Amino acid sequence: DVVGGTQIYYRLGASGETWHPWHPYGKPLTLGPGESRVQAYATKLGWENSPQASARYSVVSCGGSRCCKWGVVKTRLQETILRLTGHERKLEQAVRSKRKASEAAELRWLNAESQYQHALATKSEAKTGAKYAEEFAEKWKIARERAEGAKEQTLYEVDKELKGLVDEERLILFILEKLESGTLSPSA
Figure 1 (cartoon, rainbow, N blue to C red):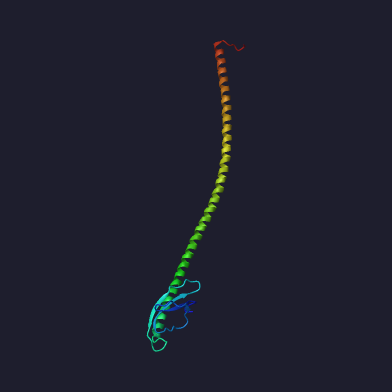
Figure 2: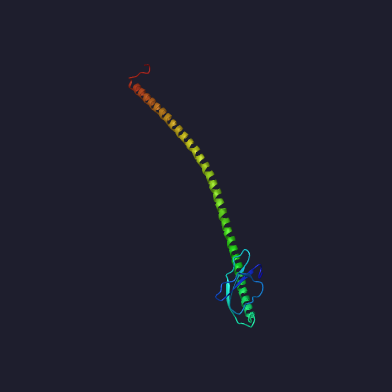
């Protein structure tokens, strides 16, 4: 482990050769003489792997199998590890940013859900109010129809009574006219 649960993996390959398998990094590397390639990446449980970092080394023979410039190799490998650690920090910042964005999205969703539930309640209240208004309107319609019928009946009866009174007035006027003209006597 290098930093907070991060593991570095590396693999080696000589110039023109295929790569060797990946190994966990735990101690400084020893490179043999000649051209060598080193690849490394960082990983942490629950995180995406970092991009792979690569470097080429030319090691001169020192008369043995050990590298004369191991300090250079160590320095370059440490620089690679620092770059990978920097990537981990960037990932942590990205995760914090994504977490904030997720919390903001969740808050927007909760707000929208609250508005939706309020709209449903308002719609339900409106339906109840509309049903009451329809029932009330139906009662008024029935009452109005009855009142119209009663009015028509009253008008009919008043008209009939008025015609009776007009006929009676004509009769009275006719009788008075006959009485005045003497063609009708009160005893007859």
